[in-house]
Image (cartoon, rainbow, N blue to C red; front, side, top):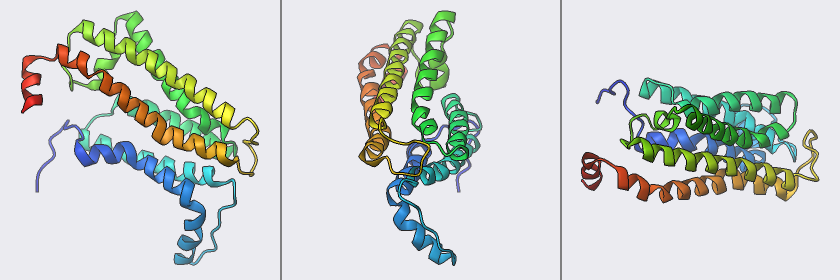
Amino acid sequence: MTTVEKGQRLTGGAKLAVDMGPLAVFMIAYFLGRRLAPIVGNLVGQDWTIAEGEEMFLAVGLFMPAFFVAFIYSVWKERRVAPMLLVTGVIVGVLGSLTLVLHNKAFFFMKPTIVYALFSIILAAGIYTKQNFLKIVFDGALDLPDDAWLTLTKRYAVFFALLAAANEIAWRYLMRDCDLAGASSCGAGEKIWVNLKVFGFTAISLVFTAFQAPLIAKHMSDDEKTDSAA
């Protein structure tokens, strides 16, 4: 049995579980919740059903505890609070709670907009105040000169701003005829948004990050290049 060192970063399966686990719970609850609810209910001797149009509320209700379990696990393993995870957690808690308490899906649709916009504002503020917030987020994972960090920060600030705008446009257009506070289904538009949020924005983020590889490789130290080649 190995002992986890204090401050050790999550790697491999643990990192994937923290990042994607809550999203997987959300997707299963949203797309399979109506089918699974009666089965789970029978196992505990209850008559559980999910009305059409209520899938989002079930998914949000299960996503929130899944996210906070992942958050607590991350803090326990790394012995630190990841800044981006903390910001996301606060927003998830506030908007998720408003979604459930006020029974209004609009709050959860706005979550990505607020998260991305806040990240963009924080990075832009760092440029203005000459604080390297992106370097803090990477927490020593990369050793780059200040000019490279500045370039990356500008790129990510613009990228997050574009994601925020894209989500805001997408959900308002897709849900333009939906009663967000009602129990009726929002139809295909809601399902399109869910897939866009989970798969579309994730894929776009991975592609964008991959495009930063040449800049990072150009400014990596010799030791890092050697480690990467090993």
